[in-house]
Length: 301
Image (cartoon, rainbow, N blue to C red; front, side):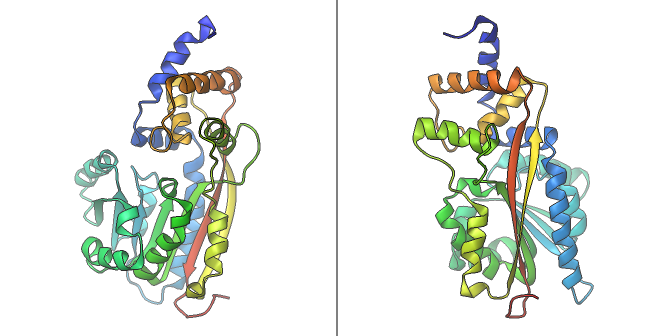
């Protein structure tokens, strides 16, 4: 039996499930402190890239799953040789395209595609290097919260394809994801595992440190230095519709799980009771893994 005073919130929570992924990402970026957290880690990677440069050439970068690219200003200014923003969502790229035209950003290139197809293995990635980038390798490749939409078992092949076929000899791959190892109650990982486990018998196995461990034992990456970080960020917005839209994004609805109406009502009631009424922010533990390619044929010191 639903509480009468919550009926309006339940209706709003259900409607919030209809936000598209681009809108959800934009809300998350605006009302969480994740954007500066990612920026700080990204800047450390960019400084390391510049420190390895032996000439004055401009750098280029590829942002995979760019969305509306919260780190656009940093990337656009730091990579004047070219910035490729690659995403499957045309609506997200349209927002960037308007800005690209308005500000006459000639070095920014927009590509709509599916990374699971274009970089699925080294052979395909080699072809994509020519068709997408005109043969120009990238000094930085970012994979920010985009790997959720592929199987963890596919990650090693994907990352190796980008590393071997698209990255420059002294480039870096910068990755960030929600931590699969977090177990604290009411974190985003716990929330996903709680409902996905209850309704679908699943939990996240998308473990970025696990990917690092697997790649570090790959003999083909002897010239790679791995750097790992783990940080906590939080999200709160004083608007229930916007708050719930991000909850649905975390629960991978509808891209990952198609919750029934009764399940969505139960989820919304849970969020009202445990987050909205006590004004508890969503806390997310997220993992960063960066691969630095030395180009020396040996592990960097």
